[in-house]
Image 1 (cartoon, rainbow, N blue to C red):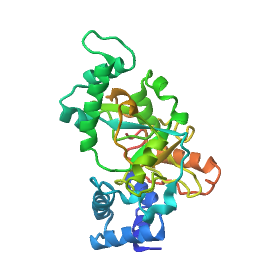
Image 2: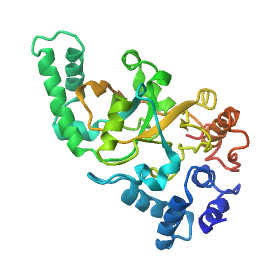
Image 3: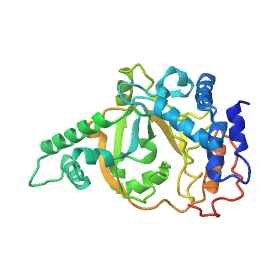
Image 4: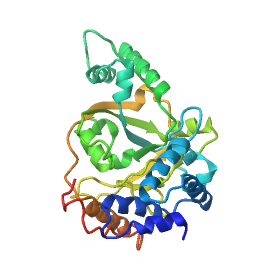
Length: 323
């Protein structure tokens, strides 16, 4: 066992909190990492002289900043050959859905969410006295051009439309909270109202974007494809996709949703389906119980038997629900 796996294993004791267990399990049980990628990551961490789990988090953040959260024209190593064991090939007929934070985009464009929502309504056939459909499309195009210029080439976590539901129908529901909870987007915790967008991107568009950079278009998520996240959970290497951790304890482990990492695209007018806001807190939950329920769900899937390990933290932040 490598020195970093030994460090992770040392966090799996009953007097450690659930966060430490989650970070450790994510690294210990991610079987999609190639030896080359794992060795490069551990060499990076070793160079940071990290003797403890807290310095591990700092070293990981530095790794993500330099290898994953890269700016144009660089490409995240998620889509390089070093990660080829996790790369996936999707059919052209598939469509991906993603929830995007609009805070910076709206501020940079000096645009209010209600105004953007109004433009979308006109684009989709509603009538307004002050603007026509072509004018609305032009307004949306200007907004997206501005946003695309700001956006980085970070891996984009996404789900499949055939699982979440047809995008235009989904847009008629309280989709921001449904999507947040179902896709495990716990950083939208409701402490602040966050404007969000529902994006719908055909697989063909993602493939075309990746080809321009000689990069893979899709990858199954690994622990190294973002910052440390207690709500991320790896899946067995045999699984064709990742699996999101549902934030609602009543549904976690019962309603599994596939996820995939997509090469980022420059958004087009028809990619933007709807906008809304997330301003309600997360469902009350215990992280230990949530992850253990999710693991039980993974183990029920074909190829999941015996995968991973449960969290046995003795003090789960004061008991359930702890968050």
